[in-house]
Amino acid sequence: MHKKWAILLTAAALALALSACGGSGSNGNNTSASDSSAPAATAASEQLVVKASNWQFDKTEYTIPKDTPVEIKLVSEEGAHGLQIKDAGVKLSNAKTSQIVTLKAGTYEMKCDIVCGTGHLNMTAKLIVQ
Figure 1: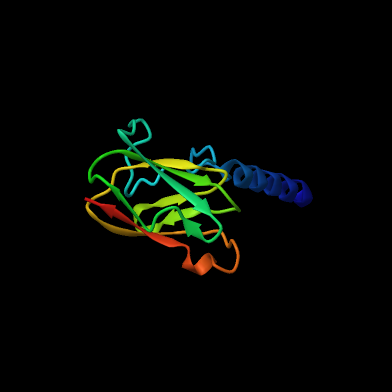
Figure 2: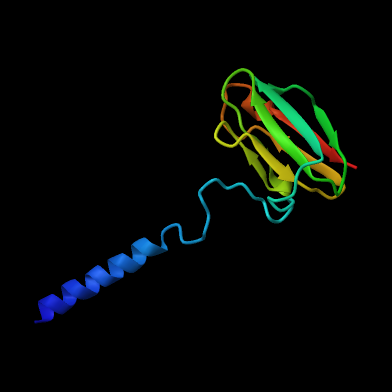
């Protein structure tokens, strides 16, 4: 009798654990950066395209307007690259190439967050929001 209860309780615990996986309502796309980006329903009024090639972005500085929804888009022209703007909650890659954000004025550090070779550590730029 105790064996049946143990099996039943184990099965119930397993069912609860499995139902909790992914229970946050997320579809796995990680499309929001709620601490600094506009709601997903907001359409971008500006677009910033960042082109990445081996060990460099196409510019050393990018400028966007403050308090304005901007779609930041990553285009990898050569090699595999990512784009992270830590203080803005932006993280892009080949799987997720764009994100809409609304940022306050300031200067943000941009960096490649996929190890791309010998020049990887130097692959940085600035995002100026004014």
